[in-house]
Length: 374
Image 1: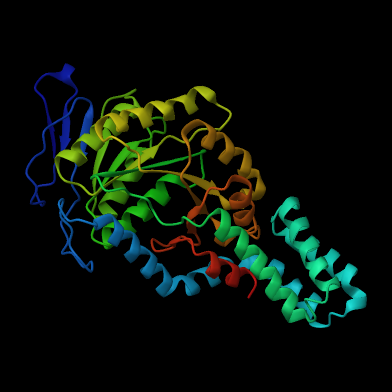
Image 2: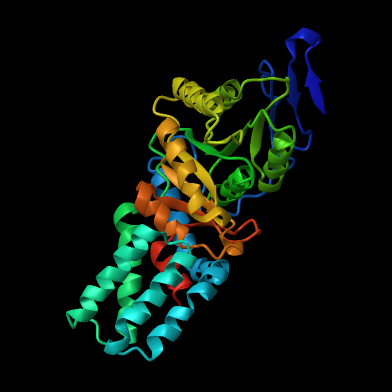
């Protein structure tokens, strides 16, 4: 049912589901707020309330624990194409001997480049292995492979170690999702909402993608699917910054734990649209000082190293705090994960390794290395 103002010029609308136990919410100018279709009994391991100290710390810990419990299964299947590409390494090292070192390292270099590790990382790793082999530190194929895995893990942990969400101590925590068109922003936001909601967080979605006609509808479907409430624009040409500001205000007034803000997809070369992200960032910070707590950029894993210019531009404009790499299950270019972390120093916080709602997984560097080099 849609409740509207008697004054058509006011453009007031409020979606309200009579099945919900929520009271009707105060309408906002040009903004529609909708509770989930039906309240579900909580199945999370704990309940949260606005005054619960350390909630975000425990939430982050629970997410990582949940990831540890099923990450090997998810990662091993999600990176199968990259692993198949790198399987040649086992063949190269199976009958390795010192006389064949140069030939084998050349083939190893090619395998890493094909998997999109990038020339800089590849040369660094291969030359390090060469030095250790000639120094007598590595004496078997098994030792060479272990050294290779250790080198990759060192890059991921030294430059991208802060993989947990940083949500601060003030509610609501605000997470902005940004990226280019077609990268999977809205889907990633919906899957992240599902994960956070399952761990006991009260999550509000903000439909800040005001350019794409179907974006709000898509996010409303995710809101219903995850049992989250949502704020959407009901007036044409509404500014994204206004929608996000109203959403954060509502989240603050109603004691929400987290507000997940969707934004319009934009090319990193379109500077006017990039500047709009700055306006969105300023708008939410006026409501909650220090917000947004996280600005997560969604990158399409199938583009491989082509994602690097995108990440650089977005980071220069709004300051990216973490990355979500999507579609890695359909890509043989999983080495780009290492390249992104090494080149930008921005941690990968989540990876998409499938189409299921559970397939957005917190990034685990050790599990990733084991998955692609198993």
